[in-house]
Structures are given as C-alpha cells and as structure tokens.
Image (cartoon, helix red, strand yellow):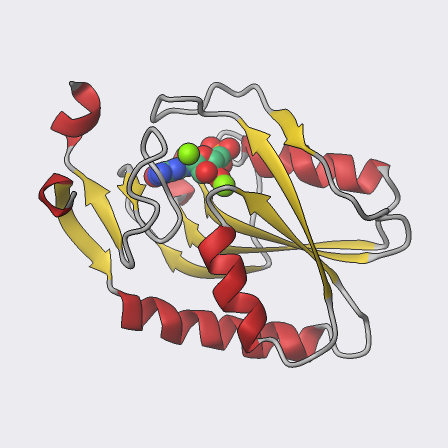
Length: 179
Ligand code: 5GP
Ligand code: MG
Ligand code: MG
C-alpha cells in the first residue's frame, strides 16, 4: 500500500494539530447554538471523528452519503444522495464536515439541499481544499490545508475504496489509477 504513494504531503501529527485548531475555532463560533454536525460519507469519517473530539460545546451529529466520483479520479458532475440524514434540518445551525473540495459540485449541491430544507444557517468546514479544480464558485468557511491539483489518498480519502486507512495524506502514483 505504501509503495503506491508518490509523496506524503502532511503526516498524522501535522493533521492532528490542524484539526485541533479548527475545533477550537468552531467551538468559539458555535457557542450556545447546538449545531447539527453533518459528516459527508465516506471520505470525511476520520476527519469527523477527530474533529468532534476537539469541539468543546454541545452538538449533534448525523451522516449523509453522496456520490459523484464512482471509481474514477475526476468528478462526473452528477451528485446522488445515497444515504440521507435522520435529523430534520429545519431551523438548525448546520456544520457540514467534508474531506476535500475539488470541483465544488458535491458541496454546492448539498448546501442547496440543506437550504431548501430551511436550515437556519449552513457552515462548511473541509480538511483539504484543491482550489485549482473548481468548476463552481464555492469557498469553505473553515479549511485545513490547501493542496496542489493532484489526486490524493489517505486520512479517509480513497481510490476505488482503498487507502482510506492511511494515517497521512499523500499523492497517489498516477500509474496506480492509469492501470
Ligand atoms: P468535488 O465535487 O468538489 O469535485 O469533490 C467531491 C468529492 O470527490 C470529495 O468530497 C472527495 O470525496 C472526492 N475527491 C475530490 N478530490 C479528491 C482527491 O484528490 N482524492 C480523493 N481520494 N477523493 C477526491
Ligand atoms: Mg467527500
Ligand atoms: Mg472517493
């Protein structure tokens, strides 16, 4: 598995430090608001679990699964809800927790869905951002690391469902997905 990695961009310690900073900021921002924190499955599951442990205010969590990539490394632009929330969002302060923003298509679709369900507010935190890939205008309220325009894996992010368990974020060797 490690043989398939071209370069480690951020190791586990660097990521944990950043997650802690994000958690402190979010704790201040959402003080007294009991946010509904939504994990966008599957990629954000590790970030979500680490992040909520650093948040010091009461909150609720829920999960949503959307798909846009399938087995490819480029977005199809078609977003599908695979698993919807269990919790009503009407009148709630929502914090969406995402692993990475590339084209922005997935998140702009999701934000639209939540706004149409009359969320009180929708805030977006992403651990990784690839601004060079944007196809729609979209900016996260809080972000961890800005990455180059390369396909990365680890810390929850997959290629064809593999590599999610790597504790760091790294660039996948192109020969792995060009095979
Ligand atoms: P977007 O809709 O912004 O293009 O990206 C949607 C989803 O594609 C992300 O939430 C993530 O799950 C996946 N994705 C985007 N870029 C990468 C990447 O570099 N590596 C991996 N493993 N997934 C990515
Ligand atoms: Mg994602
Ligand atoms: Mg994926």
